[in-house]
Length: 311
Image (cartoon, rainbow, N blue to C red; front, top):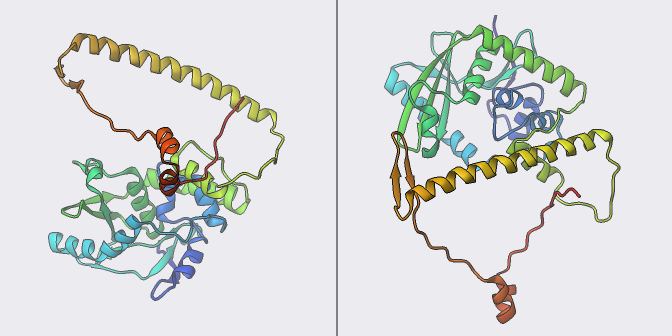
């Protein structure tokens, strides 16, 4: 099996690149479809592929520096391993499932293997310890192997700007079949059928809803059905369960505090418990507004948001 070239990316504009991406599912989309991406949800991928995403042309700071550092990470991989790599300036397409796309960072010279280049912040270093690879990147590499038919993929990451790690991922036929199945279902039953997937509980879905519907139309109303009533009942039960769990958690916490008494630190066999003093400085905004109204107006920062309530 050999991947086909959908479009050359050599001197391809960002607008044309975005348009080509909408023709299928890429490696960075897979983890979102599988529910394993905290930055993007399935509904976000759907809106992206159907040209409805409010954020489709925005690249964050982390993504920008990831692109800038790609060449450096690839060069360092070659220096440390002796493995030569080359660019493949094209968006590749699966020969049978034409909606499965791959815009790979590098291919290994002389082998059916590829390389994915990443950067990560210092606080994410735990995700890369020992044999660990973040699930989203593991799925991305397996997706690339599904598209290309290659047998292995390397991943190289620069962590915190000063720690370099590289790992090899072997082709996993069972996982690849799973990806083919969920991507087929998503593309056929959602994108092509124009049936959006449900919003989930991820931060990505929450942020997307804020971007899609930033402001409410004053006095506008809508009739909600019985299915919403069932959701609200379920939310009530979850709220009661959460309150019960929080009360139980506070009970344990208070019992431990009573045992610690005036001691700042306590030890168990595996844990360290602290109960320290700290000071908090808070601005008395009510007093400032009353005594210095002009100064208050000068520095007040007004933002608009939507509050969700149920009565």
